[in-house]
View 1: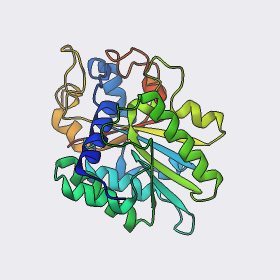
View 2: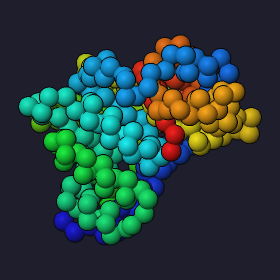
View 3: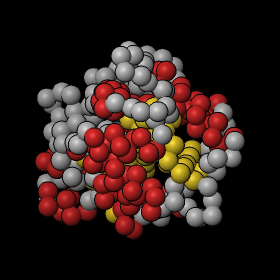
View 4: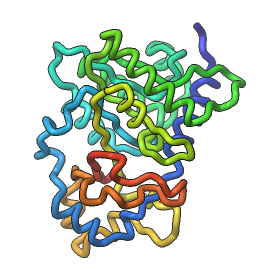
Length: 269
């Protein structure tokens, strides 16, 4: 099927809407920031065996993750090459891999570059790339986020049940993973209902003020009095257990918490 550039623009709108309204109170909480410095592990020294589960959900803001950090994470999560593993992307499943690449080249942008490099990394790591979002056509209204979340969970479960993917990594807007909407489910709760063992990781850029309110400041400015010492330690990964009850996006709906993810990766872009 021939796809026009308008499809990819529609897709980008879906992606940005899913991940763009983020706010974090972690930047206002000095004890939490100190905890990150005390308990965070430098990414290169982390024992990745702790997070290798059948499905790993990576919560991002579509283009904001440092690509070196992301590709390092994907390489560590790939597991044995003799196991069928899929990289699930939040693109409509009506677009195949070849058409997606054509569309990304046709609409040059930072986000296009971002996903083209991810596709190249998937090839290097022998991931099967699978689109898991709802099918869209030009002129169609934007699907509700709840419908997108349900579609992605169903597609992942189906591919696993059919043996197409024994393991997999999903790269999706974190708002689909966290319980941050008026409906009473998320990707995580839907996967649990299907008895799919999984784990979720949330990525935070230290140089961007991701808070929606003026009270918060960037991690890079506020995380430590010894700013240069903090920057030296990035990227860090830490368990969210000690900050699980802290709100993740209070101005969005007031529901999402760091506990919706198992680990936090803090990077500098």
